[in-house]
Length: 162
Image 1: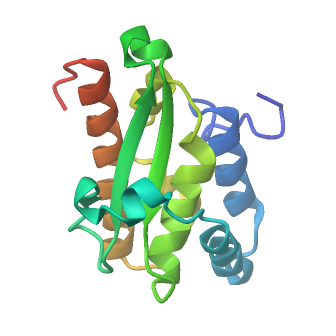
Image 2 (image 1 turned 90 degrees about the horizontal axis):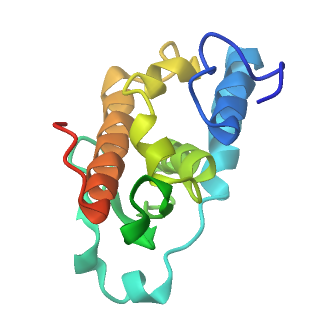
């Protein structure tokens, strides 16, 4: 982790996620929503195996907009070293929700299960967005993160007590 991203708000995060947290912290509040919209536009489309079978995705009812996600774990027998892949279905007409999904995808996709499971639950509060989006929206991001962590834990066969 570089010195530029090693702040008290991000020192316990993987570099990819720490950079996002730092970007939000260092961006004027008027530009933070634009940054969130950019991340929303970068969220990849679902692969056909999920777009053609939406029943395989888990809903996130904490979100104000309809969002669904699924966590894949490559080589789950490797436990904490297994690689996590994230897939989201978030409507384009819900840019805030898509942006939060984009943050999680950009920051966690391709990380190990150990890293994903170690992400602190206060991550949404670290994005310096509390003055721009409602607590309900931040709760939606928390719901996404908790489902990602639960699915990851289930797929590697680890009981975390969460």
